[in-house]
Every structure is written in C-alpha cells, then in structure tokens.
Image (cartoon, rainbow, N blue to C red; front, side, top):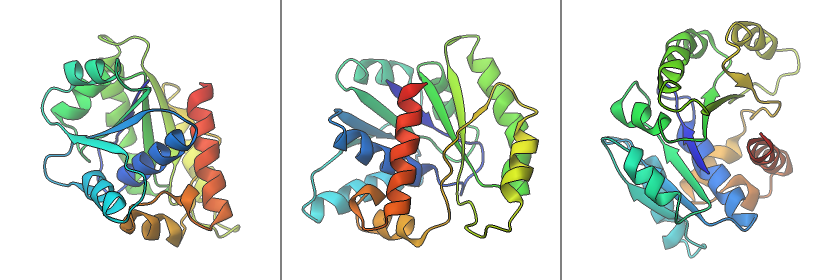
Length: 211
C-alpha cells in the first residue's frame, strides 16, 4: 500500500502524521518504509536518525526527489506500507507520487489559510486521477484545539463538504505537546505515555486500513 501524506501548503503537520502512522503500522507487524521527498526539509529523515541513535527499533527511511512513480511502485513490491512525506508545496514529487499512490492522506489544520488552499489541491488530485483513477483522498483535521467551545471543527467540516472528492476522516488529531516531543526524540506518540494521542494515531491508522 502506498500512502502519500501531502498538502500544497507547508506547516500543516505532514511529517508528524507520516512518522506517527509509520510507527503504528510497524507495531501492527507491517514492513514499512518512509520516502522523504522534500529536497530542502528533512524532518522524517532526521527523525529516523534520532530514532536509531536513541536505540529504538529503526524504521527504514530513504530520500528521493523528482519523479517518484517508478520508485514507489518498486518499493511497494518490497514493503507492505510505503509512506511518502511530500514537500509542502505543489511539486513534481507530489504530483508523480499521486499517480502511484493508493491513498493521499491530507493533514489540514482547521484554520482559514489551510482551508483556502484545499481547492487547488483537489484540482491536482482530480488531474492525477486521469492517470490513477483508483486514487483515494482522505483529509484529517490536525492540530485541532482541545477547547470544547471552539467551533473550528464545525467550520472546517462545512468548508470541506464542498469537495466530495476529499473524504473527511472521522479521527481528528488534536493540538498536543506530545506530538512535538515524540518527534524530537525519534518516537511515535504510540510509544509515549499520552493515551489520548496514542488512541488518535491508532484510530487514524485503522481508518486508513479500512478504506
């Protein structure tokens, strides 16, 4: 299975989502590889190095830029799960990965700047479906405020409902310090002592597998 974690906007939490589902898939017994596809930012690669240096079980990570299609199709023959951490912009890496991916997982913060870029991303996804008609797209709300009085989730759902091509995940990832702490330690939140964050990643991974 090839999972592309992507958005046309930077700072939405793509790398955080990518490495966390990688850890959870590994915990479930899958053979996983992360493809670091950003030519300028190496968050996933640095995380993998920190993980290995910390004595934790390594998760294979490779760096690849440019046209990713052939590389991803080849890796999918060798690994159960291939996770692509794409650049935070419209790029050849993102577009070519879409032609090979089974699923594009789109982290979106429930903020207007993130939501405003959704239309352009959906256009790109629809263009990719000309080459990969089975491509599925799942949006996951990320860094959701834990304040129960916030109406940001309802507003985001209302906005995203205009794009039926983009299914909205039932699971939401909330703004929790443990996501940043674990990232800096080369860990996933499922390996930390925050049961709420752990449950979020476990549920999101299950949702990805079920679709």
